[in-house]
Amino acid sequence: MSELVNDISIVEEPQETLSMNPRKFIMWLFVVSIIMLFAAMTSAYLVRRAEGNWLEYDIPSIFSYSTIVLVVSSLTMHWAYLAAKKDNFTGLRIAITITFVLGAVFLYMQFQGWVDLVNENVFFVGNPAGSFMYIFTGLHGFHLISGLVVLIFALVASFRFRIHAKSLNQLEIAATYWHFLDILWLYLFFFLVYFH
Image (cartoon, rainbow, N blue to C red):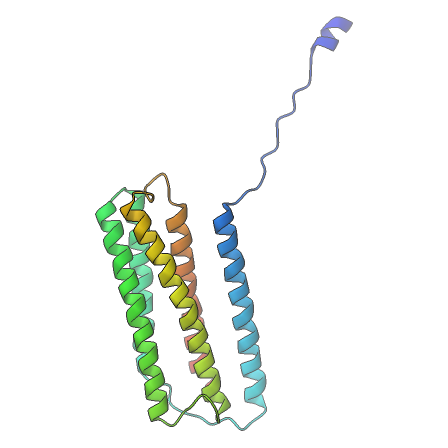
């Protein structure tokens, strides 16, 4: 009996480790840092607005239209993801391309919004309300440019067949970042309209 007990060895099952793709982890760190930046900016906006010397102006209507363009670009980004899951490479490439074009159109519309602000005599300096508008839209535009770069890399990868049903990491990173930029703009737009 004692020999039998000695021969039985206890095998412990290894515990699953929580792991994340390193690129996804970096993307999430980047997203969190952007959230912190814009949280600090909106807080500064509210504090500065309460101090007075705040000149009201009309937010150009093109910002509303650009919001619709960005929401549609999120839909086409989701279309790209669904196409990749089905190995529909043509649909994937078309959807990423449309998303990229809509992102570029959004940036152009944002620039036109700045032109409209200047025509309203709202400049970067002189009116804190105007300064914040330029800073919010400019910072978001800068991050959207980085999103366009991510889309280019995803498009190139789609032509090299590196994105497919069994390899979705790169597209998931691109889609998550793009959707985040869309949500961030919706937050900024409604914040600026409501607290204008």
